[in-house]
Amino acid sequence: MSIRTDTPNRPRLATFATSHFCEKARWALQWHGIAFDEVTWPPGLHRLLAARAGAKATSLPLLIGDGGVVEGSSAIIDWAERNASDAGRSLAPNAGRDEAAAIEQRADRVIAIHVRRLAYAALLPEHADVVKRAMFQSAAGWHRVAGNLTWPLVWRLIMKSYDIGPGAAADARAKLEAELDWLDGLLADSRPYLAGDRFSRADLTVASLLGPIARPREMPVYHEMRVPDALAADIRRWSERPVMRFVRAQYRTHRRPAAA
Image 1: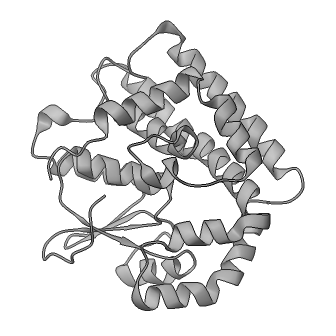
Image 2: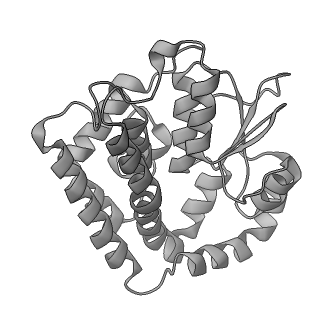
Image 3: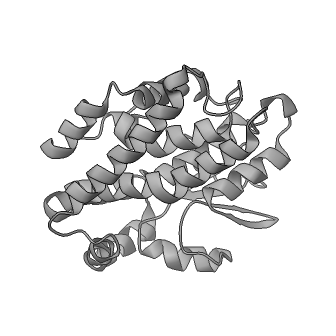
């Protein structure tokens, strides 16, 4: 992970520390060897900070640089592709581009949401301190102070936004399991990558967004996080599925940054 140094002319990547969408953007930038400074914003306060940076949206990640703000993980991959110094490391698939685009879109719009909702349903009602500690771990200065003050309101808003109530975990679990079945089906022909025959943004996206469940060693924030028994049981039960082995293989083989 890039450490914030406020180096002149480097773009800043604004993230939530544990966000799988932020990991998707971080991985793409590091894959292309693009230097950046990472700043972690507390949830809730991020809306104000995003507006001050000139963003139209209120979600992270954001890439903030002299040329403006790039909003969202897929747009940040697009930006990294345009600004990469080595075209040979392109994340564009060399075949099956329509399939790759469909996989990325489904991972963003469906799979990631069920991963997040399952995690929130397991943690927020009785273990909100774990979520807060994880999200605030790299926040500093007045950001941390303001985040702490607004956390009770943010907690209630997240609970409401993701409909975290009785049955939420079971619903998210069933929907996520259906998506894992679909991904296992894609991998049933022993393909090394989801589209084409080289690592692409489809693989990076699926691996990033399933990272909190696959818990690769290369991502300590996921691998070492303690979770409640029910979520830990899901993680163990799914750990040897083809798609989870695939995710860990992508991290093991491709997660290293292209340059320091």
